[in-house]
Image (tube, rainbow, N blue to C red):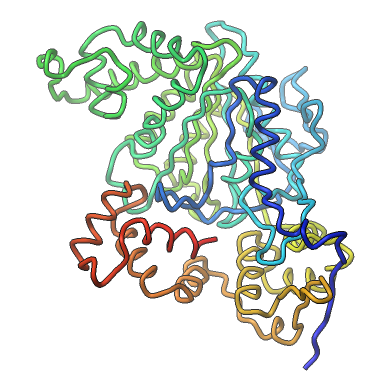
Length: 486
């Protein structure tokens, strides 16, 4: 059996155990004065056990992005020039693109995280350019919100692109995702997104201005009642008491749907214009599963002419949205009125797979060339599968770090014999089956609770199913899940 030994010696073994998260926190602390109210999206993870949110997007390289003019014709973005004169988009000063490589080699784990970005400089520039336009939007009656659509197959990194491109930006960021199992629940993603509004307000130095703007805009009990029925968490922001305004809290028909669209537009407009230089970014993920009510609400906002200082970002899977899908029709309707920034993501190129593997091992791309070739062959360059493949061969000790020589080693024959599925569910199932039985039981219950749930609900559910004597306490369960998903 042939075993290839490869790796680069490091200056000191002590450096290999450096806590990169701690270093990042120190850097953020040192820059806090300069960043002011900028929002750190590094915690906005495609996989978050605590919140239950999840997507199969992890890393990605896109094909050449496009920007759609009002005619709907695709324009090449080789020069990253929009369809309207004077709107050329370039990366902001001080950024060299979206590629970030770790400077530390670790021996007990791979250098892989959801904010590891390779090969998406052009797409990052488009997102950042649209954000800058939202920041500097003229306050006039014909100011449409900036609308960006990011699409591609499962695993190409749609969610991570958004988080990385806008990380550390000064904004109010509200993000939610649609779920296949909750398509019958209207406004699910908006409910999820606006549940974080209070935290956003509290985090801003002048967050009271946001609350004041909202209440000045939603000025009567009837409007407040319509909003709260659709998005219950807004009751924490509005000066509205349903017990005192019982007459306003009456179910309505189509009139209340129209009123909801009207009041929701006012709400979005108020948030976006409440703090100078701090636009609202509304992120809606997995639009292929959007319900009809949410689709109409989204179109109502995205096509509104009087919506400055607002950016709407949506993501969807190409293979699940055809010409007859409601989202396709909505985008055509909007595109007839305004331009849409359209970003199509595809698999990683060979050089980007090499960069990804080099990042994971803390080595130069040339040193991992042969391993990178095998990873690309097995995964076809799909970023999610590439990352999971690396984790699999690492977990199974096919890829190991030799402490004696201080080099990475891998077994080519075993790698070649590895089976790689093109189905996300099969890949995750294989990984789940390697976890302890107790963790599998916890995740089984968690999956039944839906896309989002609170820790206490999971604890209550587990307690009802299994006595404490048969399982771990809540803290131990949480630790088990977190450790198993590292």
